[in-house]
Image 1 (cartoon, rainbow, N blue to C red):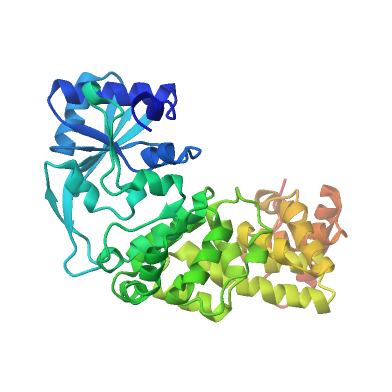
Image 2: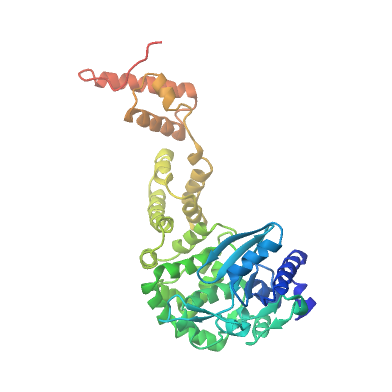
Amino acid sequence: MLGTELTAAFGDELTTLLTEVGRVASDASIPIYLVGGVLRDAVAGQREVVTSPDTAIIGSATTFADLLCSKLDDCTIEAVSQFHTARVRIGDQRIDIASAREDEYDPPGSLPKITMVDDIEVDLARRDYTVNAMAMQLMPSGFGDLTDPFGGADDAKRKRLRTIHDDSFREDPLRILRGVRLAARYGFEFETETEWLVEHSLKHLEAMVRKSPQRVFNEFRLWFDSRENLTAIVSMTERVGVMRALGIKDGVSEAALAKFRADAPPLERFAAFASTARTDDMDSLVRRLKMPAEWRRIVSEIEAVRRIADRCRTEAIGDSELRRLLVDVRIEVIRVAIAIEETPIVRMRFEDFLARIRHIKPKLNGDDLIAMGVSRGPMIGELLEELLDGRVDGYIASKEQERTHVTERLAEIDAQSETSEPTHRWHDD
C-alpha cells in the first residue's frame, strides 16, 4: 500500500494537515516522516483510533516546531520535552514531532540515553514492534512512500506483533504491557517467538515493578482507557503470565468484566477489574505500583461495599443507614457492585441508593435553623442530619414537618438541660 492508496486511508482533513507540514519541512530541506499509530492503523486497514499523528524529522524537533508555527496560521506550540519532542496544535488538530534518534538502555529498564541520528531506519530500529517501525515520507516529492525495513506492513495485515530484536523486552519491559494493550485493541496476536520472549522476560518486568513502580503504573493505567478492550487484555495477560508478574495470582474474572459497558470511564473500569480480583492481590498491587490516592481509594472502597452487601443479604437495613454507609463511596464502585451482584435484594437496594436516596436533601438549611433560634455550632449539623434521616426514611415529607421536628427537638433539649446553659437561643423578632 503506497502513495495515494495509503493516504486515502487518512481522510481529507488529516491528509491536508500532513501535506502542509511536509511542505514546510521540504522548503527548509528537513526530511520528515509520518510514524506511529496513525500509520500503523492505515497500513493494517484498521479504524483510526489514534487522534494525533506522530512525525519524525531529521534534525531538532523543537526548532522545527518553531519553524512550523512561523509558517502556518493558527499554530501553537503546546509542549516540548527533554527527549527532543514537541507537540504542536494547528487549528483544532494536534501533531507530535520527534527528532530521529537512537536509544541506549543502560541499565536495562531505565530511561533511555538518547542520541539524535540522521537516518530514519536507525530511528525505526529502536522501536518496540515491527508494526510501529514503519515511516511514510511527508516531503512532497515522495509523499506517501513507505519505509518498512522490518516487514511491519505484512505483520499489520496478518494481525501479529513481532519484536524487532531479541533484547527488546530486557531493554524496556514496559513494551510487554504496551504489546498486550495493542494486541487486545486490534485483535492482534503475538508472533510465536515474540510470545516466547514475553514469557521468558517477565522477570525483567517484575524487577521494573520494584525499581520503577511509577513508570509501570503509568503504562498499566492505560489498560483502563475506554477505547481499550479490557476483557481481551485480561485474557492475554493471564495466558502469557503478565498478570502473575504484576502480582495478581488468582486472576481476574473475564465473565464479570464482560458485564460492564465498554464506554465506562477509566476509574470505573479499574473498579471492575479490582472487584473481580482477590482483595489481597489488589492490596499488594496498589502498594507495589505506588498507585495515586484515588486509585487506592477505589480498592479500599470495594472491600467496604462488599461488607455492606453482606449486611444487606442478612439484615433489614433502613434507607437512612444505607445512605450513611454508601454516601462517601465513589459512584464508580457502587455501579460496579450493582453490575456483578447476584443477589436481587442487594442489587435493588444499591440501585435505589443511586437513583433516589443519594439525591434526597432537607428543605431547611443552616440559616433557616439559626433563624428558628438554633445556636451556631454542632447542633445545626446534628439537626440537619436528623431532618435528612426523616426525609430518607419517609416520616418527614414536607418543609412544615421539618420545622415541627426542629421545634420539638429544641423543646426536648431545653427540658433535658434545665440545670445547664441551653444549647440554642431564640431570636427576638
